[in-house]
Amino acid sequence: MNVNDQDQYFMELAIAEARKAEVLGEVPIGAVIVHQGEVIARAHNLRETTQNAVTHAELSAIQDACEVIGSWRLEETVLYVTLEPCPMCAGAILQSRIPTVVYGARDRKAGCVDSLYRLLNDERFNHECEVREGVLGEQCGALLTDFFRALREKKKRAKKEAALEAE
Image (cartoon, rainbow, N blue to C red; front, side, top):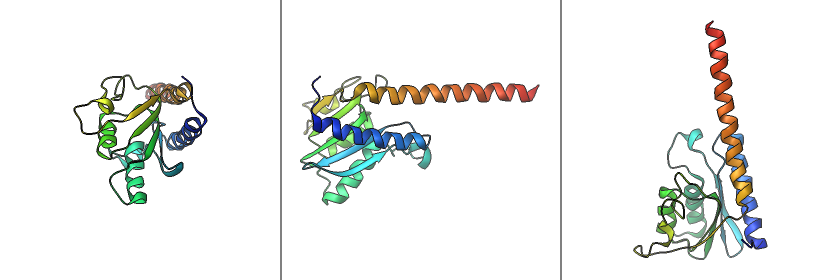
């Protein structure tokens, strides 16, 4: 894929948001919304922090962008997100009329842009999106792989320590 400089720049900002999530112990997913070449919203996952299932990076960024623009219609925007959106986020993207979505890594277990479903390009809906995938995809994917590997190792160590204490 030929990644243009603008897509790469804004995806790097989304990756920076994902790193903020990781520091908090959240799944490292970040999102940035751009309007007329300017970032109007940025967010990262906060589901564990808030204990709220809907605080995905995309939804938080969409809410912030609506406030900035003063409308629920986010026409003339581009959403950059490090991971392929889930069904909930894909629905919010459609409902907010975001015309373009750029994502990094595919989500083979919950992705609803290309992996499991193609919700953003389903002509049965009254809105469709241009989608560009794989922008800094290896870097975005590595963030997630490394996070989950470290999480599994941490759980394994805790289990081992608990077993030692029980002896």
